[in-house]
Length: 138
Ligand code: THU
Image 1 (cartoon, helix red, strand yellow):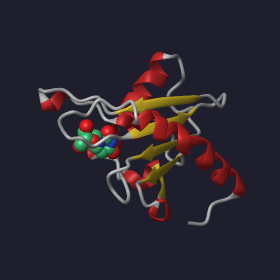
Image 2: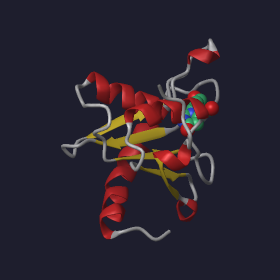
Image 3: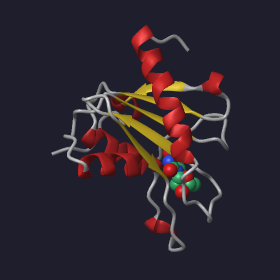
């Protein structure tokens, strides 16, 4: 994976935060923890994890948890610099469709999303536009 020096620095800053976030996951139903770390315009890091429920459809993914938390803390939609998503039980994590829809509304089209599983060498760098091209908007 070739990244600019700045992108690599952001990746290395976000990865331990996303790992820590995954350790806070509430996932008794799937036993599949996920963590997300979101870099704000003022260089804060907002963590998110998946929070499941016995009524399965109520589950919130790590990506949406991080974004909803950031918005609730007053960070503006479209202001985020990057997100890293980490899941230790797959070689490479890929955000679900629901999260992609939410991400594209709250993050700029060129915002990087670093996806990492237990095989760090398999990590993928996406942009929001690449994750959900042609997204619904009005
Ligand atoms: N999950 C996430 O939190 N993010 C993803 O990118 C994929 C899936 C969660 C939802 C559920 O709690 C568990 O992982 C298994 O699907």
